[in-house]
Length: 354
Image 1 (tube, one colour):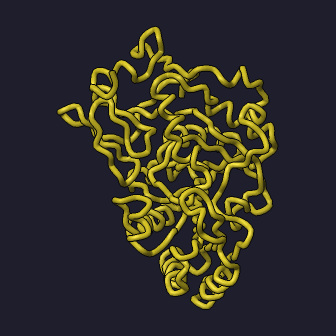
Image 2 (cartoon, rainbow, N blue to C red; image 1 turned 90 degrees about the vertical axis):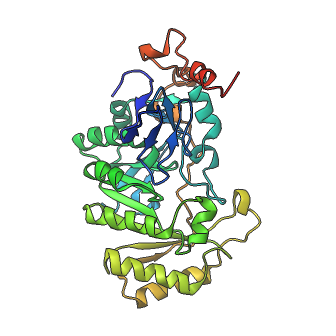
Image 3 (cartoon, rainbow, N blue to C red; image 1 turned 135 degrees about the horizontal axis):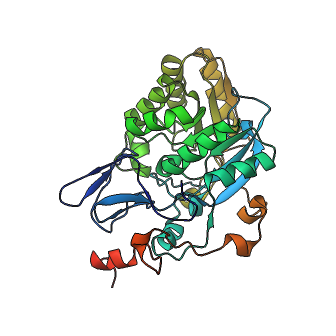
């Protein structure tokens, strides 16, 4: 943990003799040369070592019921503070958190030492949670797998303070990362977007259904409380037979008592031309799941993916003025030099910019 913003070494990486490095956080396993960033844009190779750009950077905060994640069978009736950063290993065409989740511009600014996003220590974010009277912290909005260094540090402090932790993920994550994070996470709320490889290839060209399902099953085996959700998109993953097979997989691999949430699609981004999910298909999917033996199935006709609210700024939640929060984030590590510029000189050396 650091007291000022700086790059933190990527916790799971393989350094190669030629100066390349492989990131082992998610299943992209990006192999990066000096000056390159991974698909998530949040990890960079600098002189043969990978660093996380987004450690401590908060893009959004909100407080609501744990049921809104949606999580129904862990500490029901309690409230959770949701936090997110920037970066994702998927490119969902109907993403509702586009600027946060993909965060390309925000991460570009971080990479050049020009960002004014809020930087918050793990201790401070837990203090904010306690101040707002919540019982847990949820890592959501962006993909927590690419923010794992901060997630683990916050979770350690949160558990010490008596708070639980929720990890809202697409589950395109390595076994190594799951094993690393499992002792610090109480709940995984994971998408099962489809059972079609074509669907997954459309949002992540190298992904397969089997990889995602294996990660979810691994989390369950590691003792994390798992609840899954499927956002039903008209014309994309709304075939009743496929939805029934998702329910059957949950039953056979996570157990008859494992919760499955069927949620409604609301048009956004490149899928703005599609209609909202008809309620009939959501209820049909739930009925099929119960017929397959699943005991806890929830048909949601009012919620979709976990979206960042816009009712208050990060500064408001932190109890600070915008001027206090919006300081330029220049790396405080000595290797960055007096200017505190993170990557500009390294990008120049790599020939990426003039």
